[in-house]
Length: 190
Image 1 (cartoon, helix red, strand yellow):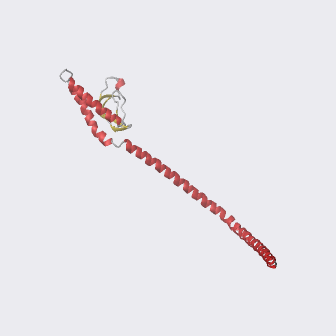
Image 2: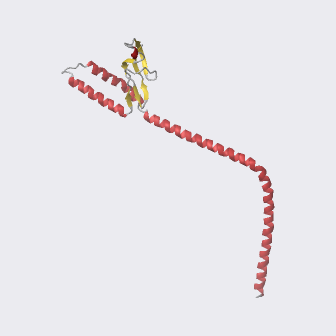
Image 3: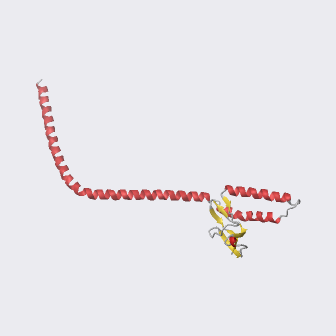
């Protein structure tokens, strides 16, 4: 029994000693915190400035990256839209040849079958190219526009209301996805 009582006294002494050590350590920690608070008060504006600079830099980088993504996405879409531009541009003289062939064929019974065949092939080629985004430019009797037309020559206008207007079209102009891929070659009334 004496051993149990001694053990309890020893345990109580140990606990009291630990509390005293904890209180002393707590006071030391409080003193350290008070000392560091003085230095952190001096460093706080500097740290706040650095934090603001880092946030500003982050926002600028984020905005720059977002702009980069938009720009590359737009460029990619433009590339897809005009991927066949070279092939379609190479096919435009074939369309011109079909127009010339139809004008050259006389209207009689002997050539009517041939003319129908040429029209069928021309329509098929036109529909395929239109599916790819090709659109014919309407120029006759329109005002001359430097951004759309190439003036080959100017002739005296038959009337005053035709001055500055397109009187004849030598070669059709075309759009590919609303961008001019070939300017119309025209005759302008002067």
